[in-house]
Image 1 (cartoon, each protein chain N blue to C red):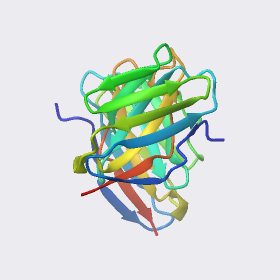
Image 2: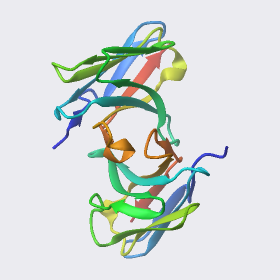
Image 3: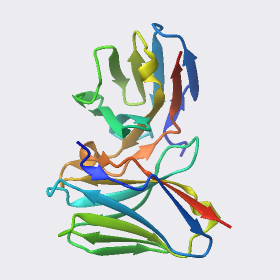
Image 4: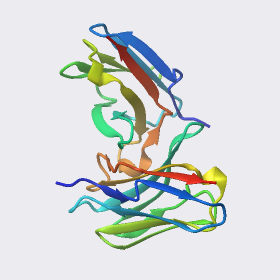
Length: 112
Length: 114
């Protein structure tokens, strides 16, 4: 099993640019989660999907953030426009019926 | 408001000794607790869990203890090995909440010294 695959591993962009993070969950998993890790706030849940449907996006910090899951094997997290305070590590995780989470390796985002 | 608190950002332990990582929680509805381990440039991986009906769960060198009255849990690693050097996250949820209800602490960076 390839595990949860995220791309890119690193993203450096300038303030105001659009950023798109990608995630491929583990095949057969029906829940997908986007987390953000910062030193100040630790691991924060941004949004999660069950069976491709967004269930709770209350953790999304602002309207600049959006997430989609067009099918069971792909999800994106988009930030438009990006700001320096968005710099963090973004993790995608998947699970089967919202049990134990399996995390991807994360995307290190730096907004200059 | 941090519902799950790991008050030690880092901990240094000598190889072969016991490592004790602590976690406190404030939400009395939490009844399932997990520990995740994270190496640099990797995502967190599940390590061990405990339900509130137990006060101890053991898996090899790893043991988690739960004190419900104190709203405190701890992870013991005996003996500590260099490969245990990582960031450890405590997480908690309400039964039936599934992974969507997982609340994480900020993590403790464990350093095992040779």
